[in-house]
Length: 384
Image: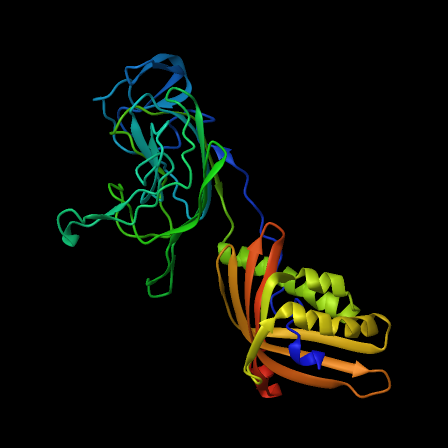
């Protein structure tokens, strides 16, 4: 029967609204240094150009371009924002002269490298856009560095040209006792519009971070003691909580599944399923492509649309885990079907669902019908 194979729901348990997205603001828009902690060496100038071949800058006038040095050997301390951030989008326009080196430390702990990497064939974690390595002397000589992540491509422009960096960062999460439950994650990093990282985790602060230990919030830091770097735009956008965003999106997903089931909209229901989705039956101890089940269910959708069947579905959750692109949801769903002239028949089924998010939204990748349960199990998940 089709009712044993539905995983569907409504907005009944978590009625969520879409989180509001804060507006991006440029930290250099007013007095250039007013949004940063007081520090020597950094200054604002009117224009910057590379002195070709010398690895130096030529600086002119006063203005809105932030600079730490003219030439190698000049050093400035880390520049840290006054404000601390958690989940955030950072958009940067920067320039380095030939051979120069700097970095952006999100939360003052996790570095995305800035380096003159133009023309390098196979970039490493120390090249432009790389997630810099961690460092632990206790690992032994020659093994201190670990965990660095190279960029997917070398997107570097020649030295002396303005370049862009976009970072979407999710801060680590901690439980009530302060134990870390999720690593810091670079949801994406783009250099000059090219994707160089896609959902990569960082297990702890990277080498030379100005702040120690994982933290849910921290300032953004720019490295200033490894070579000249100029910044002409520095935009930040605090992001809504990842879990709240994901749950709001998934509630909308299940509402659409429920609507499709209740109205007999087969094509809409099919669109909620990943093409490679798998159906697992715990009672029958089998698994097979969900597309096979869809082919069998099609007629019942037609009958529902024609009014020959009435169907209602709802669900309640025991656990909802996930990140920006994956979700594991478990609980109990209630499916009630009434055929024309018959009595309604209800069934409670414990389920697990694995979902993935692509460019076209969330799709179910695995539907696991674990076992039939009781109404008491259903009521045990009722919202307070």
